[in-house]
Each structure stands twice: as C-alpha cells, then as structure tokens.
Image 1 (cartoon, rainbow, N blue to C red):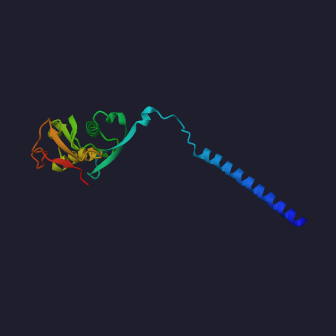
Image 2: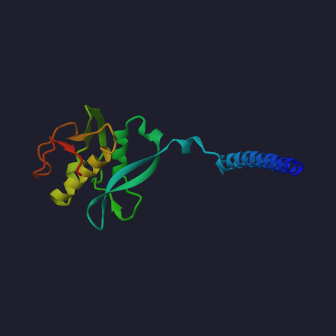
Length: 186
C-alpha cells in the first residue's frame, strides 16, 4: 500500500510537472509567434509611394514588330483628372525599354478623350494621320497600341478615333475605316 501511495504521488508529480512544462511552452510559443509576425518597415512609406500604381502601355517591339506591354509604376494622382488622355500621352512619349518604340507618329497631340457608354472617344490631332509612315500595318499597330492600352481599364470596351473632332473615313488612302469602334485584339 505504501508503494502504491509513493507511485501515485510520483505519477501525480510528473503529471503536474508535465502540465506546467506544456503551459510554459505554449506561452513561450505565443510570444515567439507574435514576434515573428510583427512587421517593422525598414523605412517610412511616403504618401507618394502609397499612391503608386501599375499601368500597361503597349509599344512595338523593334525586333519582332509586334505589340508588347510595358509595365510602368506611376503616381495614381496623374490618372485622376482624365486617365484616358494621360495614358495616350504616355504612349506618345518614348518607352523606358530600349527594345521598344512608340507607334504613335511624332507631333500627335491628344485633343480630348471622353468615356461614353464604355467607349473612349479619342480625338487626336491631324499629325496622327499626316506623320504616319510604314503603310497599313504600321497604321494598325498605332491604333491597336492605343486600343490595347485603354482597354486595360475595366470600364473601357472599345475606342472610337476622331481626327481634329471629325470622323475620318479613310486613313491616308488606306482601307482602314476610322468610323468604326476599335475593340482590343486578343
């Protein structure tokens, strides 16, 4: 009987020690987990960095002659007033990647860009047609550079091109009707 009491006392003592160790480990584990998941920035994030957004602009690859997107990080504040006009103005500028080139003819200006019923009505200056060189294939790339860029925006399904406020039936005597709405090529 005495042996039994001693054995029960030892088991009870071991059980109490085991529970104490488990409680201690669990408490320590929670503290370690809290420390590991806490994120401390290396530097403060500026207001300008918080406003950064990614856009895709379509330029021609000079090696393959196909349109490819160029991702750019810009201040979202630039897109607030008129995102459609701003994006086309970015297309007129030179791309950042040296292997890409702008498809938009030099001297082209954006007169206006208005969204109506999910279609951007884009009014460009006459230089878009007059300074175009390279035939119908180059002209199509110019148009689809704009269309692919603008249709990256969820609210845009198509683009209607105007030249100095007028619908144009022919594009430099090429069989390319600008009266149509251009939808993104897949």
